[in-house]
Image (tube, rainbow, N blue to C red; front, side, top):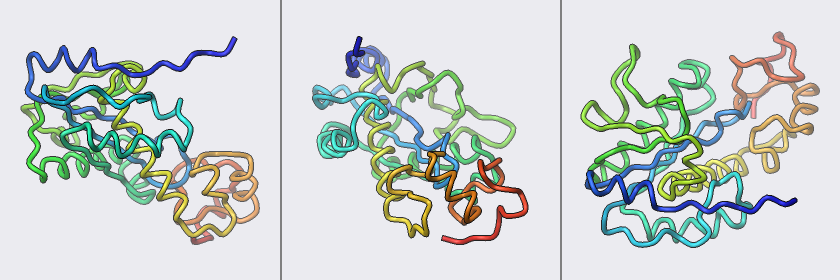
Length: 227
């Protein structure tokens, strides 16, 4: 039986808006890719934000066309939004969690630079990778509460909006990269069969996460190619 698509609702954020002036939804895209950056999208709503765009859902459940068509309605709906990225080199240097925090910091700085105030942060998933740790303070600051929400990108409209914006921007970037044969336009940096076959023939390039164990690549060929 075909599974019905579940659309995100405003239930959680509207409840939070009874206690906070704004809610910032946060989601990442590209964490599991083997090439290209990791992207973190943020979207801010207030009590004045109206109904969420029709068709808004977890970006993974939407077609590329549906995601693109949602971008303008999302921008019109939210009070502020941004997408931050961390490069493959930054992923190699700081690890994936460090890179996620760096990308989030860039996105959050962008919305704050536009004058937005963050009341509470709603983060997709179970792991609070935004929290302060031994590596430094939280990207959202010490005075902002962070709440995690499992399946938040599927259930919460503000997180789904952040997810769609991050996915669209990262996909656009991957499609714009010079491609000597890795098929970025189709795999977006994920480990598809054509991508793995290309890795086995050509080795890794500057867009690959070289600190990772790349399928089809011997360690000695990990640094040989550029794109």
